[in-house]
Length: 249
Image (cartoon, rainbow, N blue to C red):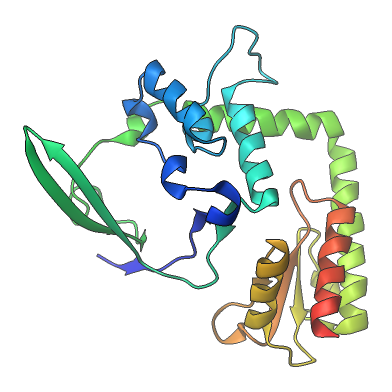
């Protein structure tokens, strides 16, 4: 089985406090009483995202799934959750009791290449046959946001951001491809100034909890990428490029 390291998002104890008070069992193992205990344990306990409380007033625009999205976005902006600077394979140790005996189980967490179910990956549960309600709700939430803004406005926002980034790239570096092939979702920039792309990404993550993409493979230090899609706004892009200017000046 092929596995690879990755950059995980983890709780920052400097912001969230005791990291041990931020974790929770799997959502399908939690009783209402356990959910309530975890809510009280830490204001950043992950239970708010994996199994948030429901209320009688929940509706398609305000429910446990939309609140989970709001919690996640807020925690990322506040630095409660930070992505590691380096890729890693993470050790995972579980200490538990069963039938009066003490056990310790060792494992690891990594990216795994998809394999045919049951051959290399041992059967556990066929999750694909279960209705994927959280993803359906998330899709519904995001589609409503798009329709609320208006698709013409969304496309115009993406176009304005793309033009702004391309202008910045041409002034400070160079576009990686011919402009006639430019995309309104992402701009690839040629590193004509020879900056250390990896160090610049790490610096922005450390100072502002924000990252951008480097090039792929042999282009890792020869290019980098700025996204201007999804919910990103022009003001957020200007802020990012301002931080980039500070690092490369």
